[in-house]
Every structure is written in C-alpha cells, then in structure tokens.
Length: 313
Image 1 (cartoon, rainbow, N blue to C red):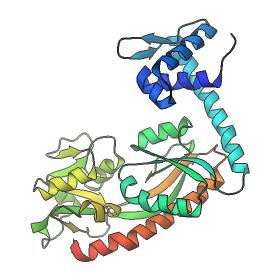
Image 2 (image 1 turned 45 degrees about the vertical axis):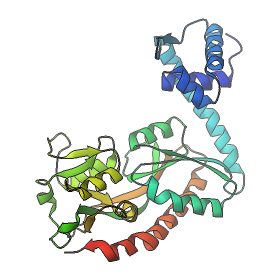
Image 3 (image 1 turned 120 degrees about the vertical axis):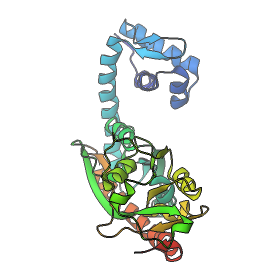
Image 4 (image 1 turned 90 degrees about the vertical axis):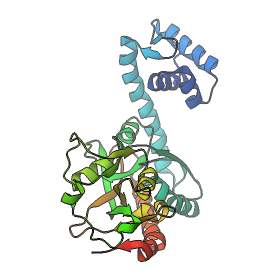
C-alpha cells in the first residue's frame, strides 16, 4: 500500500459522510469527476473497494466502515495539530468554526459577529447552524471548534461553559393580551405549537408543561420560531419562545406576550468544545464575547420590546 495522501483521506471522509458524489464534491470544492478519480486511486492503493456504488447513492463496504473510523481519527489528529499551532500564536487569529442552534443563531449572531470582527479582525469566522445532536457530532469529529447551545448537553468528552439564562415567553393572540397568563398545567390542555423533533427547545417546552415527548398532542410542529409565531398570530394556538427572539419574531405578527408566574421557565445558554482542544484558552475568551453580545442584545432590543407589548400577571 503506497501513495496515500491526506487529500484522498479528506475526500474519502466527505464521501463517507454524504453518501453522494455530487454533495461530497461540493463540500470539497472540486468537480465530481475529480473526486471520483481520487476515490478510485485510493481504492487501488488499498487493493480493495471502499464503497458500493448505486445509481443515486453510495454506501460504505464493511472494510470501508472500518477504514472510515481510522480515517476520522487521523484527520482529527491533523486538525488538532493545526489548532495547536494556532493556540501557540498570540491573539485570536485564523479560522474559527462556530456551531449555533437555530433558536439562538438569528438573534445572537448579528451582535456576536459584529463584536468578533471589531475586537479580533484577524479571525476568519465560519458559522454552522443546525440542531444540537448534529453540532455535538460535528464537534466530536473535529469539523467544528465550538458550539453555542442550550445546556446541559452532558457529553463526557465536551467542556460546557454556562454563559447566561433567559426566560421562555408565552406568545398568544393579540386579543388575549389582558387575560391572565395560564399556568403550565393549563397549557397542557391548550393547542401548544412546538418546534419539530430534534430541537432542544421543543424538549424544554414539553418539560415545562410536564408533557411527555411520546404523548399525543393536539398541536402543530413547525421548523422555525418564526413559523410558530405567525401561526399564533393567525389564531391557531399558543407557543413559547426564548426572550432573545421576542424583538425579531413579534415585529410583524398580531400577538401578545406574557411572563409566567415564578418559577418562570428558563433555559441556560452556553458554549461547548472538546476537552482535548488546544484552543480551550482562546475559546474561553470567545465565550466572554458571546456573553457580552447577549447582554447588548437584551438591553438594546428585548427590554425595549417588552415595555410596549408584554402582559404581566
């Protein structure tokens, strides 16, 4: 076995992850024929087939699955060597890959990216928005440096740093503004609109209302908080949103907002990264910028919005 290259291993990992030559080629920024040639040369060097090729999808062979586990370890070790070199340099410079969950990204990122650009101009920030399980997987595989999520995630291989807590807010039709805010028990009997499965915010809302995830509900699932708020504005039901989403999501919807009686439902937002990451010191600095960005967001937008639209009990 000769002539294996890191480029081939990265191409192999992309194809193993996507299961599709076109998608893997796009990820690697090369043409599909060029990717096919590299994979074929890799198989010839190994003397065995790595993929079963179908008309629309490719699958790893038994050997390919074993090979993929070793390749991911090798690529992660190489990435960590690059991180070690970055950590040895002064200041925050170079590529920084940040994952963010969808119930945080649209609201926090404008302030965060602005602060990072202003304070650390040499950072090359890459953003990945997806649900928590995928962020954890991509962190573990070395495809992300850190992620901003709702805590806890309870993964032994990851460091968790709590940054701030925020309230969950009831969103209901505008004509309900003067009515008492229902209790968590009362919400169980209302048409509660939730994010689709896979979103941690869905689990937090179900937990607050003491509704089991498998329990049948007379509700509706959406793919975004924006969809849920607009449905509430159309008179379909009620929903919960995090406080940071209030200013953006209620701007164009005929809805009213309300706080729950104590103890109010909250979520803890924080950052996670691999315990083995050489960038731990730099990521701790980034976490402070995330905290400052959230403080700025709350002071400039959320509290101002609440003063005009929120109903209290």
